[in-house]
Image 1 (cartoon, rainbow, N blue to C red):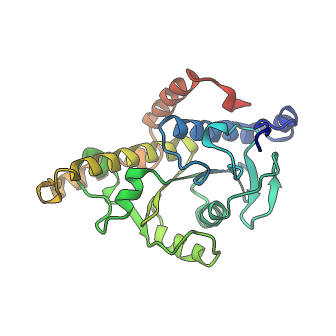
Image 2 (cartoon, rainbow, N blue to C red):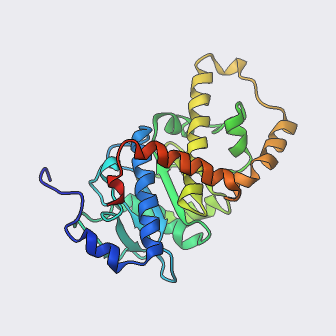
Length: 264
């Protein structure tokens, strides 16, 4: 493993073999991985982001099991179908079974979600371990509070029979807190899913910091304010509006200052 090259030898050929639309999604998903590494949202090799491959087939892209997030490139992403068949495994590393169970379930049940991002960050996992979950105590949280879905912990997600309960609990939401586990967001694009995750992670950061002073003195927003922000946030929550693209463009400028090898 020490001698593993994270850029497959056939990388130039891969770009020619896939559609321009697929390559664009590959680059965006690789960028999302690198941004997560930059923001320290990683859990070594154990979490996963995925994106649906454009086209009629139920294929999605996900990280090869064993790569760090800062090693992900457009060409070393796995392509897999929702039944678990590996279509492309450039490095021969295979897929994380938990990643397959979670992501294939959502991609099969929710074709409207083109990207699914899952983290085990300290503050995200800490909020997931609280009975009340996400609290309406910050502007960031109010953008999500009314639309968070929850799934109770059943152990490491290795069993296919958990998929039915996962998608039932997710319902029509795209904001998911996996209790005692972590966070998950979906989006109509990679850009949208990342914007949702960025805000949700910040909401959890703020909640854990605020709770350091004690829960008794936490100030919850008024119901009217919660309802107002829910309406105001719709242009982001539905993946529409130029704000999503502006946010992503700024992220890419930030990432590109650290290098562009994720595009390989």
